[in-house]
Each structure stands twice: as structure tokens, then as C-alpha cells.
Image (cartoon, rainbow, N blue to C red; front, side, top):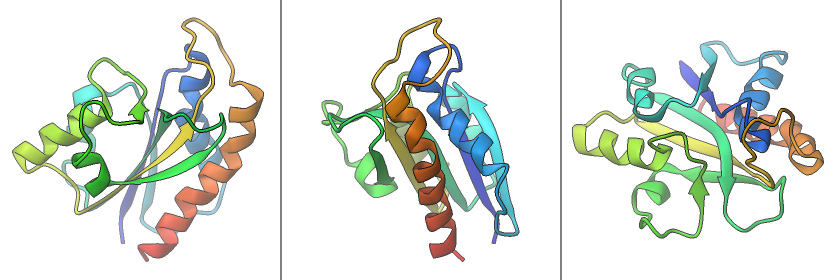
Length: 155
């Protein structure tokens, strides 16, 4: 099985960098064969090109859903595609957001067969600030464990 794990975020925007920190953490762990891990940064619509040839994709990104900072959420593709623009949660903004990229992928037939987002609830999205808040930093291992759990399910 081949699976792509993409960490999204902006290193210069406080907690928004959490997706990148999770994939950096994962790169230090033993991963199942066929697992590729990339730091995608703030990809916007370029997400479509990342997963163009992939059957299984896990996106890791910051979310705002009203949960306490550091909460790790598993969001399924079907839930995201049916979400209204005023959904209670939002993936952090990277120009064109992940939700828009998913909906465009659906319209163009460019979605992986399996896609899960591991979202980490953030506290701060302050521009030009390095480093995660304490609660979000503590969530990095839990978010990595959630990614590994999905990989195990997909074996």
C-alpha cells in the first residue's frame, strides 16, 4: 500500500505550523512501507497536484472548531465534502483553503479514493510568530499517533 501524508501550515504563523511539526515528528518514527511524508506548506489548490496519482492521503493541518486548543480531530472526506461554507469548523486559511481544494477536486474527479484529515485545534494564528502554543505543542505526538492509526487501518 502506498499512502501520502501531507503536513500543511505556515511556520511563520504560530500554531498554524502544527501540521508541519506533526510530519516532522513522523519522519523520526518507523512508518509502514509505502508511506511518503511531505511538508506541503500552504499549498492552496496545489493540493490537487500533490495527490494526483495517490489512492490514499492523510492531510495534517490546524483547525478551528471551538474545541479546546490541542484537541486532535479526525475528519473524513465525506464529512468535509458535505460541509456547508458556514460549517462549525474551518481548516486554517492558506490562500485558497483545503475545503475549497477538496470541493474542486470533487468537481474535477481529482480526489484520492481514501482521504482523512487529522486536524489539531489551534489557539493562535498570529502572523510573524514562530513556535506553537504549549497546548498545541503537547498535541503533536497525539496527532502523529492518529496518523499512524489511520495508516494501520488502511493496511
